[in-house]
Length: 350
Length: 213
Image 1 (cartoon, chains in turn brown, red):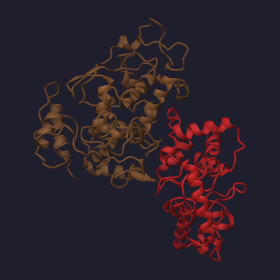
Image 2 (cartoon, rainbow over the protein chains, first blue to last red):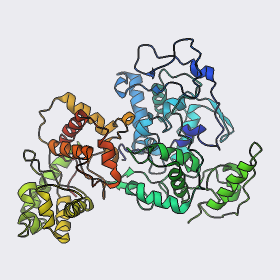
Image 3 (spheres, rainbow over the protein chains, first blue to last red):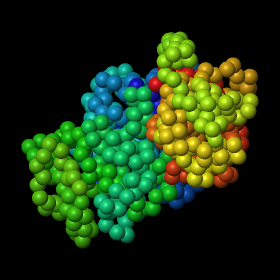
Image 4 (cartoon, rainbow over the protein chains, first blue to last red):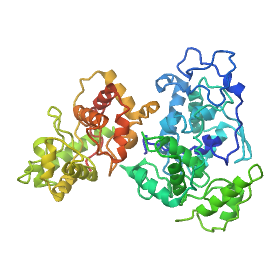
């Protein structure tokens, strides 16, 4: 089906550290980062790792990690599993069809087949698990984390831990992380954290940014564009997009992805303000319900959406909530006291 | 398998089209008095002419095609031969021509005599890009089969190599500027001359993969 253009919304999986709302992963220590050693004799690993034993305060800027080249996939049974994982990742629609409930592919959000820094690369995610996550309130393994991707970003169902699909995906992650230090947050992990905008993110400005920069590929109504029956560009909202439980539904997460990566070839050209505005606009639309929905939108929001998102709240209510949290800095965030929006989908249309 | 079937089917369609089926508009076959017939350079089937540098037009999205004619007329895209021809074309001429060529099957590629290493390098760029240099894969925007995504992204698979090279160079140097949002400029600027040649040679090896539609 959607042969290569993939949108992989495993945003959640990798995006653990993205926004202020996510607290699931441990902060690396300077010593851990400095302990990274080059992968001997290989073209993977750290290009300019510090000499052995050098105490470098590099927690903030350790050397960039480079995953192995695709041409290095071994020609054996292990390599076949790596390749299957890559194929599932790039064309989830075809190779993991039974587990996908929308029009997305993993590689839609994890660009360069999960290799690109600042696009939630798999090599950086792999080495951060197992980890305790607020979202699931448990220690997740990379496998259960990937299950979350299917549940939310792919709006589907989780492959069993011992399924071939899961084995292949984990093998692909592992292979990409060859030579990476375990338990270290590598530069390029997750998505970038976009600086707080000068102006409160705005729907009207966001619509303008969308029309001028995004609609050519994603359609005037965020519906994506198909070619020969398959999505060539993924839908950003609506029934075929990621659901309300996916990490990308958070405004801060989407802003980070967009600012660094969109449009193709022009990553980094939108201003921080434009990224915030268009992320708000994108995530104000209807999309499939959060699978954790229980009772009402308000109840689901209060239980699962204490974050920078528009699930069950208007942009105005979100802005007010963020402001309150900023004021109460250091204290427990106040519950957003917004009006209940009772509907199948919690999107607030504008 | 699938491509064999599709090639066979294409051949049947072409034969049918050339005998009876859809009649090409007269602007294509005869011109309109002021503008010469499109077919005189691009062929009735839109296969172009690699030796002369006339591009393949078959299966270009109609909106993309019409925009190019409009841009030639407006001077936002220029070419010594095409500019005066486009200026002699009416909007209706452009639209009927666009519809005609969009319905033609992409021509089959001939056997390539280019070094396989060059083709392989181009293939890698087309499929995987070079993200570390801000170069996305060609097929991210022009579809996984390279046959384009209507309305804005043209078919590039099967295009003559010399033409692809000339256009990528034109974007790179700023001679061509009618790409929406500077999307092609952004990519071309990050391509080396070797990249451009490799990817053009690879794309030229791709023939029709589906029936004309």
